[in-house]
Length: 105
Image 1 (cartoon, rainbow, N blue to C red):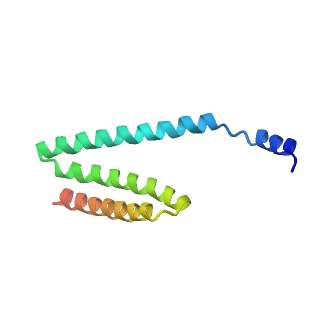
Image 2: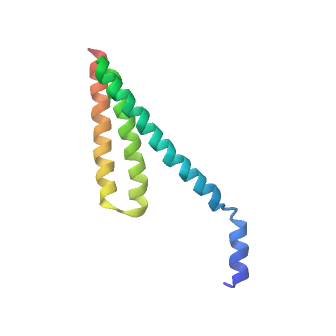
Image 3: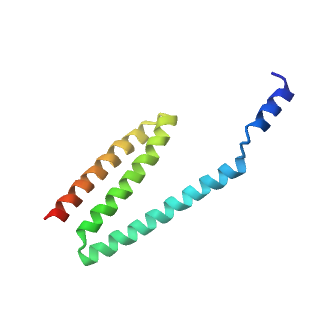
């Protein structure tokens, strides 16, 4: 392939690295804010004894962490991400089960 063919193919892809950078930055900020709100709600629930809400929040948090790690593991094949997927998935499932048991009591 010549240089001109490569440039032409690149222009046809309509891929904007700036847009991708902004999206990734937004995801990182969203992750941080999500974790901060989750932490606040967990601490708040600890003081007021709302265990059902804690388990529902915990299930959401751990499935979010697990899904993020899964995507990273799929492409990077890092075992630490695989361990995070398994642990996060189990924590989410256990939180859902505990939530259901608490609500049905």
